[in-house]
Image (cartoon, rainbow, N blue to C red):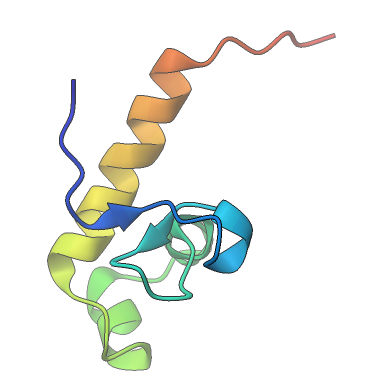
Length: 74
């Protein structure tokens, strides 16, 4: 099992969605920024409260979730 010490899930924070270090910054936002073509450096410049390891763990977490989840495609 992966250890994600920077990914938190708290029902009182952002509706229980996975967030970065308890902040109201969802993992999905990090993924969207990366998918839109932003570099890690650009993300860190625009969101100075994030750290490089936050981005890495968000990507690792997403990969882990997809590996564990089975989705039917019509």
